[in-house]
Length: 139
Image (tube, rainbow, N blue to C red):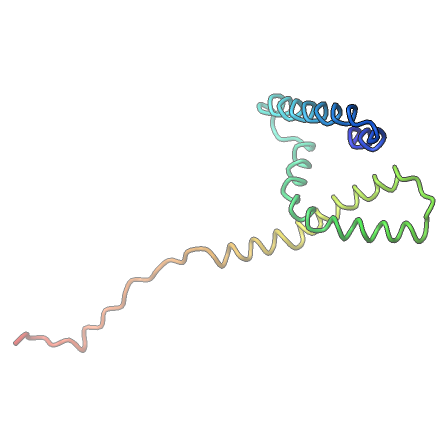
C-alpha cells in the first residue's frame, strides 16, 4: 500500500516511477520468499489462518469489491465530501475484505459443498437378473 501511495505522489517523474515499480516488484518477491522460508516449519497459527481465510475468500472479494467501492464512495461523497482520503481508503479496503469473506462463508462455500454433493459418484447397484422368463431347456 505504501508503494501505491508513492506511485501516486511521484507519478509526474517517469524515472522515479519506473524505479519504484522495479523496487516494489523486488520487495514483493523477497517478502513472498521470506514468508515461505519462515513459515514452512511452523504450525498454523492465528495469523496463518486469517491469511488462509482471505486466500480462500479471494474470489468472493474479487466479485464484490467493485460494488463495495462504488457504494461506499457514493455514500462518502454525499455525506462527508471533505473526508480524509487515507481514512476512506482504509475503511473501504477493510469493508471489501470483510464483505468478501462474508460472501465466501455464507454463500460461496455452502453452494460449492452443495454442488460437490451432487457430483459425487453414486454406488451402482448389482444388475437385476430375471430368470422367470427364460426357457429352462434349449431346443
